[in-house]
Length: 309
Image (cartoon, rainbow, N blue to C red; front, side, top):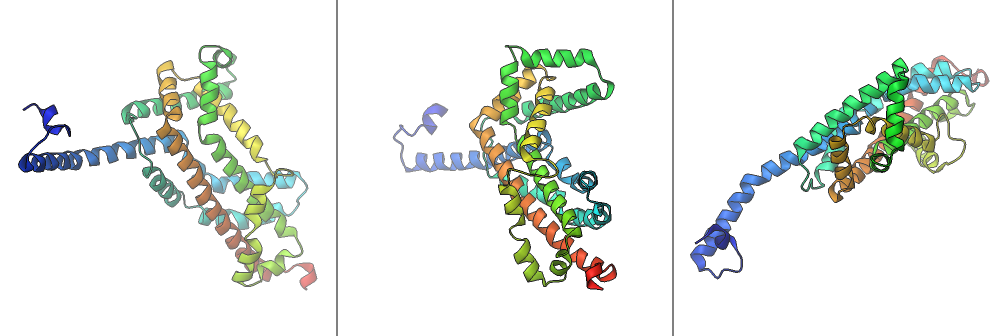
């Protein structure tokens, strides 16, 4: 009997053959399941690399300096005093390793489909090379490379695919989440100068949580007067960066990334990445606010406001 007939459900078999078939199928699943899981893990790891999830989260403490400068430039003279209080709070609130692990767990729940991990990893390496090439182009002000990149983006051959892929990738949404965190930081710096902040900082933990609970939701709903950077601007700038990097890729690697992000599996993983990143970011932002106002309570004990004296 041929193997194809042995495994075919249309063949009428006796109890012994049915039992043998079940054993064979179970054995095959036991053998291949770990391989499929490993392949999915490799795909998830590559996706995190392409979207720079770890580096984004690790860079959050360095955002404090940028936000302090933005607040100072807008006339907040006390922002520089609040910065040293906020920076260690941000560092304690954002746990890149734990947050990446949580995002990875979410991605693992989405099947990888027929995506070849090795091919995707090769494209990811090319994408990283493209990122370095564009960074060097900006650093050296290389007009020749810039014209080549711009011509490819404007061209009818690869231009539409490049622009579509930049729209499909998660990075613009992740950049918007970074902008939201910067807005939480900015509000924190403003609170330092607010006469009511000392009262809130000295309140019980429960009252602080109640008062601070709606801050992030309120900032997320805001579409005007977003400081220091509006989320739409952050999305637009990230998309522009992506477009230039994608235009630096070889055709084959560009095609691999395009196929991945257009596939049902790629779209599902991208969605899971964005949703979970937003969740862990909101949790970290909440911790940041709570820890910050707790730290302010200690600061105001040794640096009382004039009205408290």
